[in-house]
Image (cartoon, rainbow over all chains, first blue to last red; front, side, top):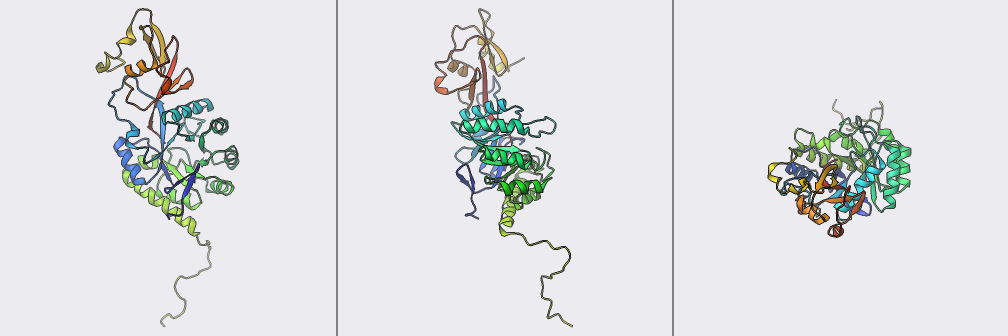
Length: 261
Length: 87
């Protein structure tokens, strides 16, 4: 599938799996899981540094070298457009002018459901400032279209709530979003296991972003490998075009003639 | 105890009693006694020099090339961030 490249903000990627770097036991496990997943785009969060830390304290970025991965700084934990914008300006400074970002503005700490009104407002400012904005949103097709129209480079609707592992709750909304979008549509949040990722890709999503499904598996390294295959498997099935579903008219796969009597 | 004992020497400057200047670093109030302290010296004292970090100085991003010409003053607010694991 070398020819089936995935284009985001003018750059081609081979892997359609995007992964987060949170919730792992340690940086070594993060590194191994990401490597097994085959992901090329990895999300990172931006947080206050501890003052008075050990100078030799390990840093996440040393384990996911920029030569090998494209960083996708996020705005996780931001509940207002202003906090999200500040966070990504800091991220751009931190990552030497890097423009590709994941915008998410949350609306509620219990569900982490996105606040789409704040998200739209933040996206407008960030795009004006030259950021390439991959945007986390609800599975509302109208908001998805608006985010595309204001210039977001990828639309990332949830499949279900962040960290819930509930899988794809509304495949039909995702289909509407995919049908209407001219930029990549990436399911972000809610995938729980490999079959969820396959379904997302079979629906025609361009990619899937996940973190907890891998990091919270009993064996994250093995789940990372499973997710790599799931994404490829679902993509190939989508491209192959599935057979039509038939309710009851039987059509055997084996010849109906030549049976022994 | 705010800091590990290993760092106590590095943070003596936070505890000067003569004419202290108060600034806020990541939401924590810090007092300085020295007359002038540049952002570069602050970074060294916080042992951040080998880290990959970014700074917001009174609400604006400040690039590394401006650290040495920036001198802290009473009431300044600094946010110093790094990249951590996240999804």
